[in-house]
Image (tube, rainbow, N blue to C red):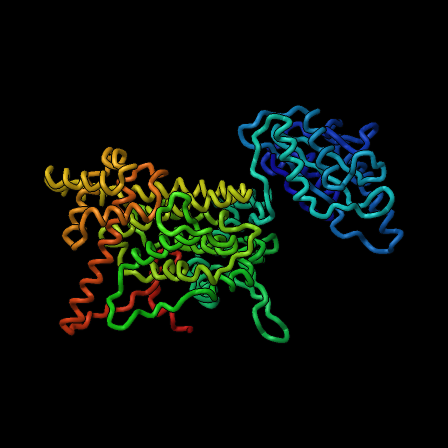
Length: 581
């Protein structure tokens, strides 16, 4: 059950909509199901057609009487005096009766302070039903005694009351809100998008674009310049004394009002973490990306994988971890790591193999909600992961030798850990968003992993060698050996063990180190988990050996030409993105 509190200034205009046919003739049988004083109250929905407008005028005047009395007494108008709260059941719920909706309305006006039970001096209100699945509660925000109601936090209070009502009426129980969600689009915005043939409202489209651009930008100037390149109009609020940007608003190119003017939405209106201050906190906590002299630039997918593995080790320590135990990081650090992880999903969606990008974009979009909670993030503690995420935009390829799949394998584990962390702290909406993102991320992982695993399986060592590796599995991971050997990815793991042995790693030691990195108890496919850990270690070892060989011969590695970053549109800009620095 979803309430949506808002305020306005035209009682008669709102009533015309509630008792009218709707914008698409969707209103059927509009009528009052509850009110502050039912006997004798005019109901335009049940009146003859020739009396409809007259009764609308009477009802509006009746509801506005306390407002007009206060205005006459104070000599000034009462601003935003119309209180509006549509309440809708969740898809799939049964339809409530008029009597049940009446009880829902009475409970909400009581909980929000509009008309507390037993208070005959409360505000005047009505509840109108014009569809099977929702009602509209309308009130005027002046009490019968001339005072304003104590309705501070009414949206949060209405949400809490709906959670209780859902349980009592046997309806689907939705996740409680915490005030950090992006505002839902209004019905007028949704209707406007449909008329224009858009899948999303202007607010939703701008939010999605701004989130993606913020994830890929290295500084504030790059954030605004990329938005401009996407055709988005920007209006900044400048401090009169300092000349600094104090805030900003965005407008979709084709979103205009009745006067033909662009409709702007403030950054914090789109989402709390898109305010100028929250953006600056994120964008100023990045490490320099200057490569080490004399060292070849390593695979950036593997760099990001290493940063993710460090995140797992320090931010989400496991009870089953066989290495040095830690107590975990403070919540502010974990929240920062979650925000940086969200940026990694966005950058991976731009640079992953083409066939995996759609699912990664969906994962990143769903995870945007999991980024926001009431816990203030210490972004400085996630600088390494954020920097590794940004570096993906400057890679020349989409990950060599399964590096993309290895990263996504680690990302799946991190996302599960983030979902559990939110769940343990009662962040129901964030946990649900993380689970939604996990569905898409797992699909993207399988899309990138299957070709690599198939190729490794095709190159499985001889039966004698494979049996020898199986013996090492029993010795290195006795508690999980049977599950590892029964895993469909075991032949691919055997190939990875052969490659590790060729690089100079004894199989038993390589398996032991891979098993110790993280517990295997919760892994659905333990051989696959070990496979990516092993290949990551082997790649690092080969890089070290190559560097030692170059150092001994005195040769210098060739420095590749700098690669331009990929923008959220999926293209690389023609000019150097650092030209404004």
